[in-house]
Image (cartoon, rainbow, N blue to C red; front, side):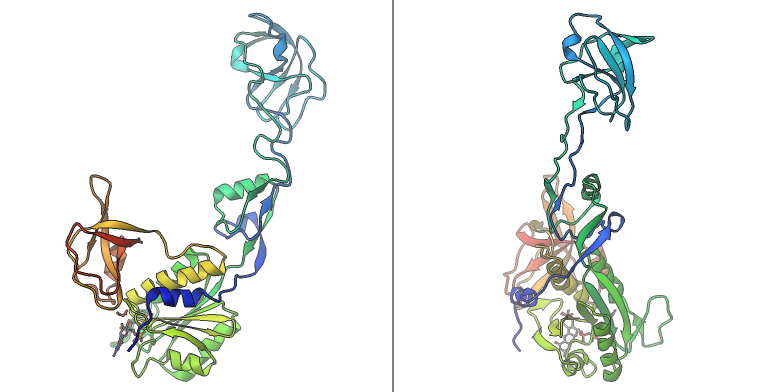
Length: 401
Ligand SMILES: Nc1nc2c(c(=O)[nH]1)N[C@H]1C(S)=C(S)[C@@H](COP(=O)(O)OP(=O)(O)OC[C@H]3O[C@@H](n4cnc5c(N)ncnc54)[C@H](O)[C@@H]3O)O[C@H]1N2
Ligand code: MOO
């Protein structure tokens, strides 16, 4: 049986992906979303020369000698500029953020002045232009400050607000319908029958979808029955899912019905069976405009395939370049045997040596049902097909989790 290499499968999956549409959302809903158009400032900030300190707006040229005395002719709190002009020998009481009045060019901080009635004495002369923020210090009107496909965080949202954008153009979240299959499965929180287990993959995949900017849609658990399964597949199309993720039933058993049912519903198969471990029975295709990703049922296989295929697929729909995550190298903490023809993703602990080098130590048994190991792993060691045996101390490529 021939198995497709991981890289080829990924390339096939991503080759015909279209980006999701643009939608406009209020600032309060834009955190974590992907910016879909360049954002230019609608204003200059600050819009006027502004004081950076509480003190007095003065003319620097008036500071002839020590203990200069100036007349205070008015006040400029933030939000209320002083309408007059500061002339020779005059000062205006000013507060942080207020416009610097005409005629003044320097701020004398109040700690460096002594006030007696309407007169101040300069105790310490400031340099010329001290504590004046020129108009446009932060940014100028028309400047493009945020570019797609930026993932918007608190810093960008504050800047967008300062540019006076209350609503932002973002990519629609890809809608990801998630359908578990198997008579043996019940939802978390319910009591399984004697031959049943708790469905776990759904929770993990839904969280992964959210993490990478998608919107998970729960299609529940389908029993191993082609008619019910077909009904659930149609639910995904009715929900206008961008992606349908099926969990389980992808292999060759008599009750692995997913591919057969999807085929009858009209799916074009892109690939099935990949040279990877875990995740051999991974399947992908297209049903109308919905991308289909059939993840294997074994929990670790589901999640590792999600990481390597679903995550990049969602990123591509959002117009983001990112692939699977940070890939780097680390020192192997224990020996590894020669690999077979499947690219292996080996669960391992991740630590840092005294010299700052990353060290990965593989867990012994790597059964794809063992979720506990995945939860305790810090990285996956990537073993290329037919990679030779390695001793502890060798350099290995890893995928940090
Ligand atoms: N004769 C062969 N048997 C199997 C092969 C093969 O090549 N020849 N491949 C094996 C590999 S590798 C994998 S991976 C599994 C995947 O099979 P399926 O995708 O058909 O998954 P199921 O049979 O439905 O389930 C496998 C396993 O995982 C449990 N499961 C399923 N869904 C969930 C879920 N949502 N949450 C938690 N656990 C789930 C299920 O109960 C089974 O224990 O096939 C091998 N067999
Ligand atoms: O690929 Mo399966 O995921 O080896 O258990």
